[in-house]
Image (cartoon, rainbow, N blue to C red):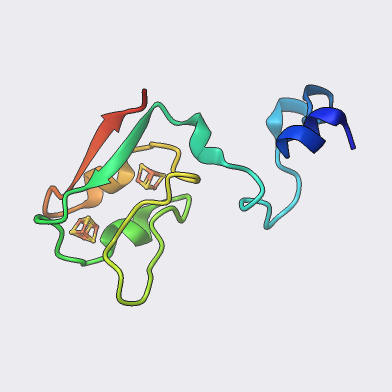
Length: 99
Ligand code: SF4
Ligand code: SF4
C-alpha cells in the first residue's frame, strides 16, 4: 500500500486504472463518484410529494429509499446529471452549483 493511500484512504496516481475504468462490480461504495459533479440537486421539501420517481430514475442509485425518511440525495454518489430534476413531476428538485 502506498503512503498516499495510507494517509488519505485513496489510491495514488499510479494505482489508478487506465481511463479511470472501474473493472469490478460492487465498488461504488469505495469511490465517491459524487466528487465528479459540478452541480448537486436539492430537494425542496414543501414541494416534494414522496412519489419516489426520482429514486427510480437516478442512474447512480443516489436517491435511496429509506423507511420513514423523506427523500434526500446521497451527495457522495450523485454525479449531478440532472435526470432527477427532469423526471420530478412537481418541480421539487433544483440543481445548485458546487463551490
Ligand atoms: S420525484 Fe419529486 S416529488 Fe417525487 S419523490 Fe422525487 S423529489 Fe419528491
Ligand atoms: S443528479 Fe443524477 S445522479 Fe444526482 S441524484 Fe439526480 S439523477 Fe441521481
